[in-house]
Amino acid sequence: MALPTSTLERDARQIHADGHRDGEVDPGEIAVGVVIGRASEFFDFFVYAIASVVVFPKLIFPFVDPLTGTLYSFAIFALAFIARPFGTALFMAVDRRYGRSAKLTVALFLLGTSTVAIAFLPGYDTLGTLVIWLLAAFRIGQGLAWGGTWDGLAPLLAINAPEQRRGFYAALPQLGAPIGLIVASALFAYFLGNLSAEDFFSWGWRYPFFVAFAINVVALFARLRMAVTPDYVELFKRGDLQPARVTDTLRAEGKGILVGAFAPLATFALFHMVTVFPLSWVFLFTTEGPTHFLIIEAVAAICGLIAVFVSGVIADRIGRRNLLGGSALAIAVFSGFAPQLLSGGFVGESVFMILAFILLGISFGQSSGVVASNFAPRFRYTASALTNDFAWLFGAGFAPLAALLLASNFGLLAAGAYLLSGAICTLLALRFNKRIEMATSGD
Image (cartoon, rainbow, N blue to C red; front, side, top):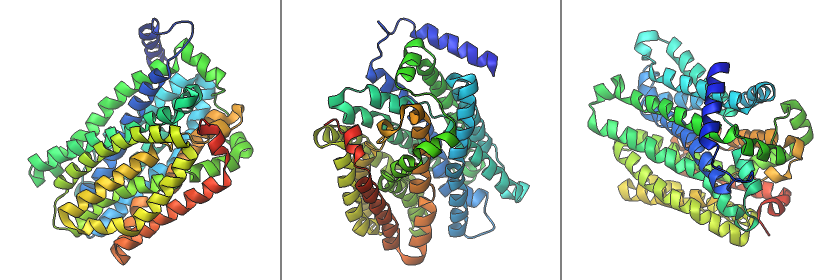
């Protein structure tokens, strides 16, 4: 990887050479890099998530009923979140020895390769149980790669954002999620709506995975542009965003990492209750096809995109800790009635998705790096990465599996109870970590 990496570094530096004066970097420029990186990651994420509902149960698990096949698919879905902290440990070692650009190049190469490999998988009828093991292996590859794609730009942005606009800048990285969902949903809706079932399951579903690989190439160059130029290298050093050993970080910052992982738990639980679980419920338990629901999801994601911006304005007025706490209370209320709307046909589904995405946008917009400034400078970079990994693992990794399992056995209200548990965890984490207000509110 030495030659390609050095070539990319040289090209990135050349393009970036005239962009700054006196070593200053505009926080808005950091935000652009973060949005591009996050959008590519979330596009990969949603392509797999949608396929885990509409493709894999039939292609990989045709020997069981559709519900069981979807539960199996969601179990494999969770493997990436389990693998992600191990990926962080692995790629932090690469970062320490070879540098951030080598880490990003190898990680995004692994992510792209794993994603494209999934697109070439045959069905169970061709390879038998081997195809299940291959899907699991490639999913683990994606998880390891996501651990390595942590570039430190989110905490760098939090550190360099103007004090009076920290909420606004904290919201910008979160735009990647709705952007990725909109594009992934639109692609799958197009192929589902314009191809026969035979053509879709033969080749149509594979194209979004190929697109994901192409987007990763663009994202790699955008991230290298940020990671290797002198001004950014200096900013990383100034913010003490250098990799530390994972074992040392856990010993020194374990409590803070744990609290930080639980602080946005309600948001991350809602994330999958809105983006993955509803599609599986509508696909399995209603007579409607997935195409129209993917369109509803894309439209609702636009509402979520707007809500992310709104979250920044609100946070700058009342503080991020207050916004996270208020959002958790709203999610708790939402969990008590909203899931029932999924059984209300087109109108009920639309109301559920729009309300959920507005609530998700407001809460998710402030869930990025809420405790980065609390960590000791020496461990800030690695601790922020691990906090992010564990937040997704605890809050989202098993959410589609748990929600579908509960809802299929006890009704949609039980899925709401799962969401309620996430809201309670967030409120408790905020109660025990009052420093979030000091570190992030801008007060």
